[in-house]
Length: 109
Image 1 (cartoon, rainbow, N blue to C red):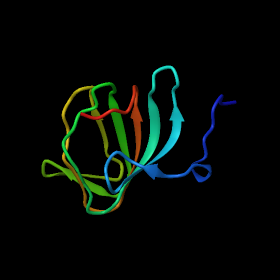
Image 2: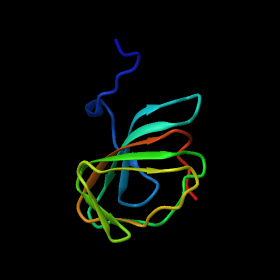
Image 3: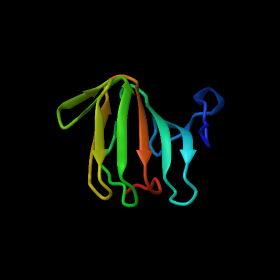
């Protein structure tokens, strides 16, 4: 049996770090500050270029399409941004839902 189970239907979406972005926190590691979240980007949202100075970011696109540097990422895409590496801007061409893990605190710079 798993020690921790989260059902998305039992969680609530929260405002994300940018307008038009919402987070549904599935799990938080109290020891590291890391989180596993569903992220929802509303269609048309642009997230500016940024870094995560305290965490590596792993992202799997569950649905939708976004674009970065003229490259489209759609359902089934996976990408990884190492701690401190600048990425973005991201442009949500449609509503995008991703499963994202930060292995440390979710901070932005």
